[in-house]
View (cartoon, rainbow, N blue to C red):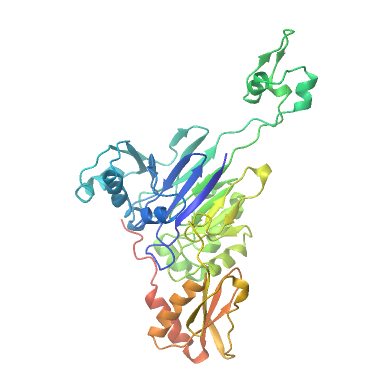
Length: 412
């Protein structure tokens, strides 16, 4: 059974040119589970290889604008397509009031929308897995979500079955499903006689927005993939505390304590570009990734490999990379054909961009402020933005002024 997480929006509070606000989808077999639905989510789905499918369910973590503003538009789009199948929306307390207030915006629908309010500890049973809610610490009505697969039977021991005289066919299938059988000579064979130890299913944990919390650590215990927020770096820990978010270091500490297999950090403030958040978290928890929009985290069964990030795994087609030298764009067939060279010696790094496009965005901000800048290759496809030493303070002020983080937090 295939299982992965598609990151549709990875920004915190407001979109950037490269990141949309919060939304992600768990794909398990044919199931498509959308968690949060920020502004632009349906367009992200249309841009992706997933497409805007007729979802049966939507799951919300909380009701801040950067997590729900895309829902009214999606509901209306489904109606314009003539949808008739009911849609279920799950969320914390306050969901009915929220959707009720949006009725005038959404207008008449061609299908029923069923609203289900949940509290931490509630469980939704599904075929082969369950969705469990848990408490988070964001200062408002909010819940996290865990997708927990059922325990699987142990491996079937063909040699043991042959020795017991079990014929090939349906009888072996019944044993694999945990049922006892009778063979032709009247003997009863128990599943334990031909099956190895039970094998755990997989577990994906999504926190939405949260400050550090023991409830989160408990819920994340042993997760294959732990998706949580890193709105800030640790140098902004005071700001994180004020807004009830967490830093990359705090997220990594939770992952380490919860013994997870892979940590995926999202909901980045617009002042960050990814690599700096990844480096900070990896200093404490090495198995950390910072997905970008339309990246995918694949979660195989433990015996088949480790969870891993597939960059651009949900894109319809990959654009050729563009590099920048001296502010001029150069299209490159492959990254190896173009290195970004910083030819100026007395330069100081002021930012690390996730890729060349983000570096261009920073250069535009600096150019508007009358500041010259240069680019250089960094680690993990990142791009270092440097300015003359005499312009460092002015450059930092310009970047912060254009990327002020997370004003839509801590509301009552």
